[in-house]
Amino acid sequence: MSSKKHFETNAIRTQAERSSQREHSVPIYATSSFVFDNAEQARALFANEEEGNIYTRFSNPNNDEFIQKLCLLEGTEDGMAMASGMAAMFTSMAAFLNSGDHIIASRSVFGSTHQILTQLFPRWGITHTYVDLSDPAEVWEKAVTPNTKMVFAETPSNPALDLIDLEWLGQFGKKHNLIVNIDNCFATPYLQNPAKYGVHIVTHSATKFIDGQGRAIGGAVLGSKEHIEKVRFFARHTGPAMSPFNGWILSKSLETLAVRMEKHCDNALKLATHLESHPEVVWVKYPFLPSHPQQALAKKQMTLGGGLVTFELGGGVERGKRFLNSLKMISFSANLGDTRTIATHPASTTHSKLNAEEKKVVGITDGLIRVSVGLEHLDDIKEDLEQAIKASK
Ligand SMILES: *Cc1c(COP(=O)(O)O)cnc(C)c1O
Image 1 (cartoon, rainbow, N blue to C red):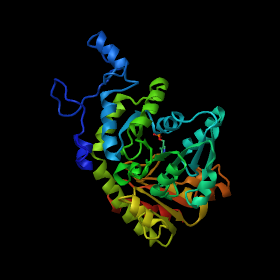
Image 2: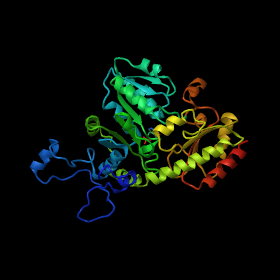
Image 3: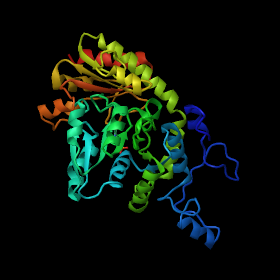
């Protein structure tokens, strides 16, 4: 499929080669290995002289279809499917970093990414420095050491929905000869393509908006042929491979990503605008709202504002808990990026162990509610939020 086709077409029409059964929809290649036609072909496949499947830990038609689509959607040369978002995050770092290397990361990263940086990597002599997304360029510059090899960030961040200027970050990486790695999970390739700005590695948790229906865990690492060669070597021999069943689900999911993201973002912007005028709501944060301090940057690097909205419910931690206990339709779940609207209260759950200063640094306040806006009718989402806000008073 030519990359000159549009996003939706690439997401739908990129397809594994049709078999002799003439199927219209791609079957699931539930096979651990593939047979060789003869000894010469086996030799050529193992010697990388011929491209083809050998074993599903290395490659599989369903996972390859998923990755080919993602490469077209992100504008990257190559990629590899991973068993989970965390397999993608870990592999995208471990494939490049050696003992003694240093990584600069934005402070508000996903919880398990934080554990890799602070608990696991130090065991292998890999150190990190956290920088805030809002820190000025000098602070980022100061974090660079002679051993710095990679810079990693999430934009928009979770749950603060702060952004980093990808164009600036691409130049920063180039200036210091760093591998720039962006977790593009919140934006999805429909809203933002980090590779356009010189970002070398784009990582995804496909579990979120890419699946979009809360069914499957998966991830991906994307980048240039040269970078992905290293990722592939590391993954081939350590085994974070995606299951073909999940590859099949997630490739199907990409077919509807564009229409789903349009609706997620439309519902989210309307909900954010509505909440901003609500007397019980102290503030609302959404990248495309004029009140977001980085709205101009959001409009520059994102086509739409995303599916997440955060707001501050006056009344602190206890009111936040009462609010969640009062929801009738909206789910109280750790996931996000689902057809179903999901609400969470970081101060009493995911971030309850942080002290006041740490919470402030990652942008979490006591009454902060994060809403992953789903695809239900907007009026029903509003109604449930409204009754829960009232009941939690
Ligand atoms: C969920 C998430 C991950 C981890 O993905 P899994 O598929 O759950 O392993 C990584 N980064 C971000 C931003 C996430 O939201």
